[in-house]
Image (cartoon, rainbow, N blue to C red; front, side, top):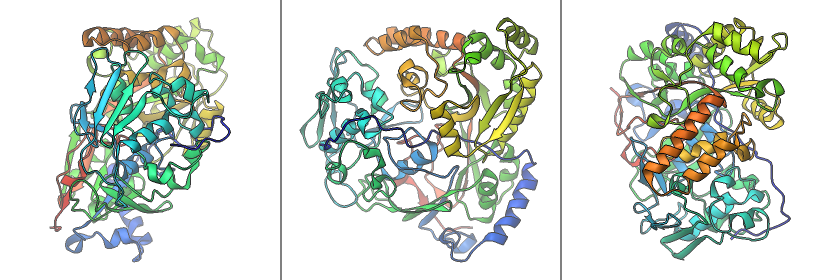
Length: 560
């Protein structure tokens, strides 16, 4: 168990995924320019270069693109894409998801047993699981992890997802040391009891990385998220172990000998570079695997020994709107901003048609089918006039640079909003600056991406619910609609799937009308990899998800 100390909420110390972008240059020019730059800055002591390069490439070492610099490797922190991508290599959850976004067992031996009233969930772990240091991975680790995640005193940004579990309120209020509703009857069994029916619980909490109780269990609850373990995880349950983070250069990982399946790739270097550099390094052989921009696709398709695969994505690109500001509280203003953006044009011109315009945070047939916001500048002007919009006051649009399609989108959006009387000023920022602006509520608009709400629709509450305002949860916009919250809460107490679906559809219709975010599009994920890599299956899920790749299937052969 976690040792308690003085209880007070600890501010969130990590990041959300904000995939940003770089330049509006032509793909071919960018690739050739970065090739030249790469040659100038190359250093023979760089292990990622020694592991690659034509016929002499090391067949046991993989170089992979990491689209931003990581900050912390803690599931207690707010979701940050690059952090979660690294964690997906070194920690396993009970469940991941398959290509259709259905739950897929990882540490769990199979689907949970669920009582008829959807209030009791029994999980069975795979037999013989071990941590990388040889210690058994048992149900006690799951109980420890869920207690840490449910307790705001640890600094957890995820505690709201555990609210339905018996004892969660007492734990959050400091009246209990542990979750009464999470127990381990034996080493391979975890039993969870909720205070009300919670049909979506498995999808809500089952994908959290499990933490080692034998390493962290003796630490105080207060500030656990700041523990040094999360900057250098000493033990792992995933396919790889953490070796080092060479700041701003690479994260080095090594195969986990205690993993439940043999891992043939012995070392991985995750390289935080811009998309331009990643694309160029695919051509030189310095990069084996990268998610690329649609604008780079023609150039990448011409590269020798590089294969391109695509997948539809449930994740989306969007603009957060700071609704703590009075001028953005009127839904007509948000509707006007959305109507003023030619989102179909963004899909066609900025991401080369590789995406779909969306009008809801809900995915698939849960999203409203007849409530689209077509591009209509005249209507946008009318809505702004009705709402009494002050066109003289500037509006900042913040984003983190790094991928060219997002840079281009920001510029296009600026122009289109200015055309209807919104004085937009572009503001490139670093991740820390953006996070601080969220916490202090000093941003106006923020461009970011990510999100998978296909596996479990109730997770939309994390970005929309009144009690999930950042940094407590993922509601960056600080949108709040009590009717929406009531529909989502009711959906979680219903066991009948048809009724549950109907409630989500009602919530989606309400969300669509209120526009908590300016939804832009679902971008297809485009993966490019050197043909020496086999066993890689593309996922449409954004790279900030854990439990979607089967690393044991990945293999490297000799370069051509």
